[in-house]
Amino acid sequence: MIKDNQKNFSRLHVVIDACVITLSYMFAWALRFIGPFAANAVRARSFQQYMSALVFILPAYILLYHAFSLYEPMRMQGRRLVLSNIVKANSLGILITTFILYTIEEGDISRSVLYMFYGICIVASWGARMFIFYSLRKMRKKGLNQKQVVLVGYSRAAEEYIDRIQQNPQWGYVVRGILDDNITAGTMYKGVKVIGRIANLNVILPENRLDEIAITLGLSEYYRLEEIVALCEKSGVHTKFIPDYNKIILRNHIQRIFWDFR
Image (cartoon, rainbow, N blue to C red; front, side, top):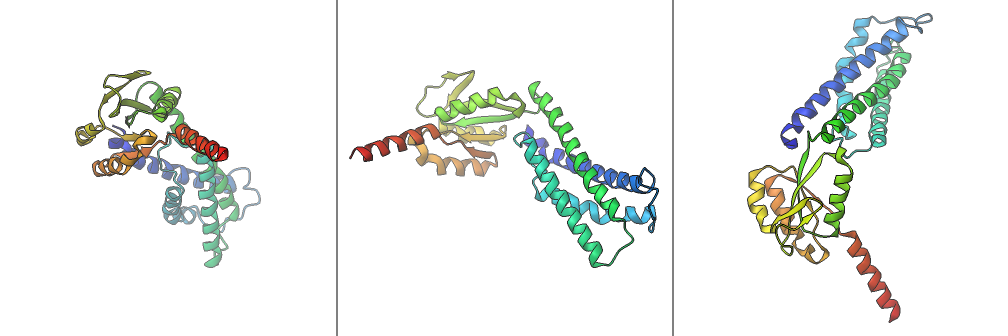
């Protein structure tokens, strides 16, 4: 199950980021003092002194990455959003670093190194995440690293949700079935079966084999929402609510027509 491995994957992601940040910082130093920009460089601090700053930079950047949701699951995050958050985290990081250096009156650390580090780190972090993103995408298309989901409530929202999942296999979602009190068990929609009544959650959830519950109740059954959410929360299974927008919009439209007629 995905949730069993998510913590280990998140830790691995932190390790990868730590390596990317460290290598970006070292590469920025090399560009400034060894590479094409070394001709006019004045080395007031040793390599060891520059690297000692990583003791503070690394944890600060990891915390910033966490604060900007860069360790959230990537399956539903847009690439632009990830890039935006990387830029925000690095921008805040370089501002904090520059401010601290100014505060302690440290003028021997090359600002060029910091600015190069800023640009390199953004590109490298983005590249690492895109490599992970496309690797996981290929795995999901092959049926690996999938998220097991059960829908609660058969409605137009449930059908549309199944349609979107089947149109986007890279998301890695697999709908194991639908629970509903009004539709006969065995009823199928695009290969997804109604497997029982909503009360069966009391049997399914303790088995701890699901990664997510999607509540897709019809409009007439919204009074059960609080009961179902409370049940899911006790089990620790992530729960999301998929509203039946079509019926809500249609109902509001009919009401407006009725009042206009009056």
